Length: 530
Image (cartoon, rainbow, N blue to C red; front, side, top):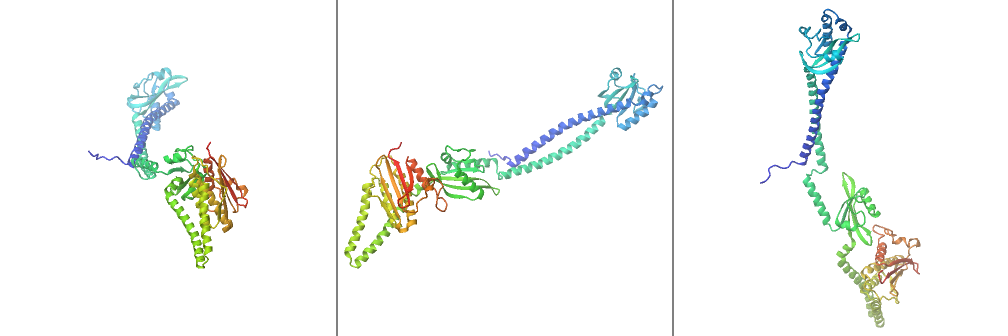
């Protein structure tokens, strides 16, 4: 059966809960204070009664009148004056036998006092108590009357409890009015506070918040890319499984603090500029990643940043086929460009009937191509390295610079554990840099030489160019992450990646100056891993 009673909204629950707390608190305080008012009022009236009683007992006229034949004639007017002035219910003066000499009801003069005065007359004690006499319930005070140090009578003053109750009633009415005002203010405060809380949580109900949290957690965990969020203090506030794997060994849990200086720079930039960063190359260990960063903005203020990190290797896997096609296309284009130029030359020679020269040009071209292919296939036993070198030769012809491979080079003994696919990336990167430096410095006179050998326990490659070279003070620093001499973003990672990759293969890379004044890179990689 469908439940017809819906659960109250969070706003109603907050208002109700806060209102109940305010109501119970105010009522509890009011009850306690009300009982305290009752006790304080009675105590106050008792003390007031005792003060009036002692003041009356010290009146000289009353003390002297107790020895008169008819004391009431003197004592009654004085007692009534005191009673009216102090607001007491009664002021009674009695002798040692307890006979009244004054009373607000004259018919009671001469009668015996209704309550015992033994303790006052025999022990000389002043007492305060609540009792019922002929005047009704009252808060009473009795004190002895002395003459020359001898007790000669008793002074009794009482405030009727009816008067006390009237005072208490007045206080309680004021307390009730104050309580109503406090409760009303508390109710308004509860409504305002509840609305404030609802606004801060985007007017969502607890169930909705719980669902959104679980949904966010599941969404983040399902993302294949590493996703991590930081606050202004670089503390991790959210992280998925992939990011935990990537940041393993660092503070990779919620509450941990990022310590990587480059990540901190990215976070600072996003927080300060409130702008996103995309496709920032970032090196973790020996692997290159692409980092995107976006600010977390709340009330027009940036409270943190979210980073999405994905390995470039995965991007490369997705684009591998396209890259291979592009590489083939570039090689064909370079060859086509070169062949078209030479074909035009051959056509011109034939048109001019210079058949011997045409035949010689064709023979030289075929021989050059055959020589390169024969040399590479005979000297380089690994097809990946041979293909890389052949591709760079074709690329050099397109750039109109000379790429020479030393005829004495030989690479016949490559162990099966040697990662040629990883090495080809390093080799291609360095040759590209060398051709770019030579072309930029010397134009068509640019020259790059590659030599290699597997003699001994290491595989050694030398790549040198006749470009401007690298200043000696940068020979070590150039391999540091972020260092670059180029203009623009995302530079300064190529040689850092090269160095990290070579170190991953347990090898070394060195930079020196070539004989032509350019740069010479020497790569040495052991055949057997330690």
